[in-house]
Amino acid sequence: MSRAPPDSRFNRPTVSAITLSAGILTVPAGGGARAWAAQGRMPGPSGTFQTRLIHSRARSVEHALIRRDPIPPMNATDLRLSPAPSVRSLILGAQSGIGRALSARLSRRRGQLTLACADLRQLDATADTLRPLAKSSIDTYQAQLDDADSLRRLFERAGQIDHLIIAASAPAPAGPLAELDLDQARQAFERKLWGSIQAVQLALPYLSGHGSVTLTSGIVARKATPGALARTVINAALEASVKVLARELAPLRVNAISPGLTDSDGYHGMESFARMSALARAGEKLPVGRIGRTDEIASAYLFAIDNAYVTGTVIDVDGGALIA
Ligand SMILES: NC(=O)c1ccc[n+]([C@@H]2O[C@H](COP(=O)([O-])OP(=O)(O)OC[C@H]3O[C@@H](n4cnc5c(N)ncnc54)[C@H](OP(=O)(O)O)[C@@H]3O)[C@@H](O)[C@H]2O)c1
Image (cartoon, rainbow, N blue to C red; front, top):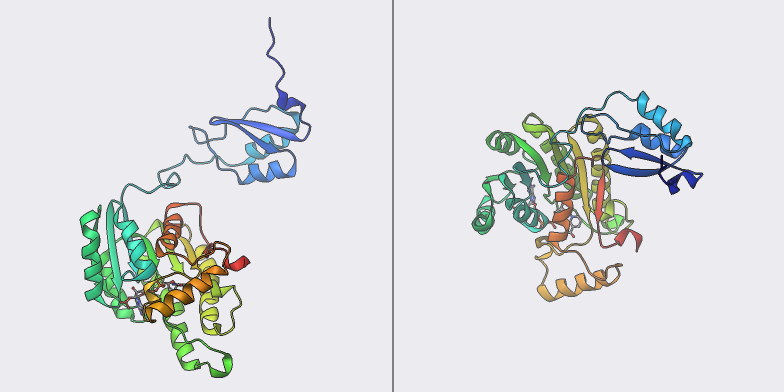
């Protein structure tokens, strides 16, 4: 009887191979492999691990796998690494800048899209530009982060949602501490931090358990920038709250996107030439050589929404500003 040729993997003293139903996965032997196995959630069709011991040093891995409780089969939520067929999303701060770019992206998905911001008239105009290409239904409502009644009305009218995104801004005073208007700084903190947390609290009865909340921070949360104390304090607190909320509200996922300098409507109050040259100068200092576009920030929200394995995370989209 002919024997199968020796598998070259047997000759590797420090490597174990585990055969899964989906193929062969090679993992480091020893502690690393045990850790992988203890955390692993890669079920076969029946929902349990299907393994074959190839290398003797994989025995510890096998034991680790056998000790685990049976893992339930993947369901539709687990598999949602790509856009779900139909989703219900609500964006607060949807009228301009990053929120509008995200509105455009989400409107191309089947489902229900609810847009809200402070100025309903402008938001309606934005929605009208999206509808011709939209695959989702689009509803618009007036609501403000710092107005609990408007938020209650918003969530009552929107009904059940899968994904809540808060991209609203809260202008914060800039300048050195000696000149900083602390009353304005407190108001901005109240509006963006507690406003965001209040919005999440009021949305809870309407959020589906497998859904997500995505907040918006900003690079100054962790990039020490003289003159940006108010924004630093607000966004750092917001990032800290994301991690607590992700644990408290699990399995609902909670993340934040932290944009770097992005050419949004927020800067359109500046004179055009001054704005363009200031943003260009700032962009030159970044590893990517330019500032961000709102659409590039929007794609990070889609990642946070779509990837059911991401929670408690702050996603930096900053052209490398944190390492510059
Ligand atoms: N752009 C950047 O360079 C940058 C960098 C770091 C972080 N961020 C953060 O990213 C987020 C979005 O910024 P952006 O540049 O897209 O700002 P933006 O262009 O000024 O848009 C802000 C949006 O928030 C809405 N909004 C303002 N106050 C609100 C309130 N009290 N309640 C509800 N909605 C409100 C605005 O609606 P109305 O027009 O109706 O008021 C608008 O739709 C902000 O949290 C900002 O701090 C931006």
